[in-house]
Length: 131
Figure 1 (cartoon, rainbow, N blue to C red):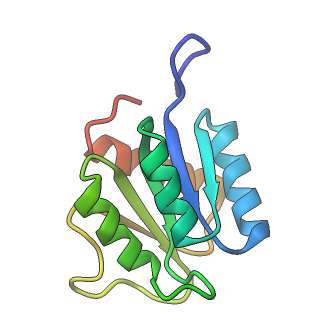
Figure 2: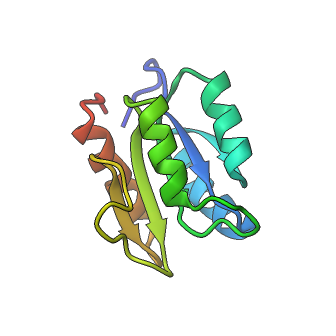
């Protein structure tokens, strides 16, 4: 975890369920991350385009009301921002071959805050981000 003088690692959290978004954001902030929150694919893409300091994205697969899934979002992010570490989460589906971009990580819901933080750290370390 970064100390008080180090810049905080910026993470985009994409989750359409308000309570899950709030809980995950709080967990990641408590672990020392700067968290940008998005409830839609459009909001996620806007954050990524406007905030070059973002180095990771945690995205749910099932985004209600969206024509795109978290898998589709992950592929679009990997194509446009290949340096972004990607962690996909879902309690409904497991990824099949070809669902996720190369290098993306997957975490099955439900999970504890500690498990989320460890999974994000693993995704960041795999991208060479100094934690």
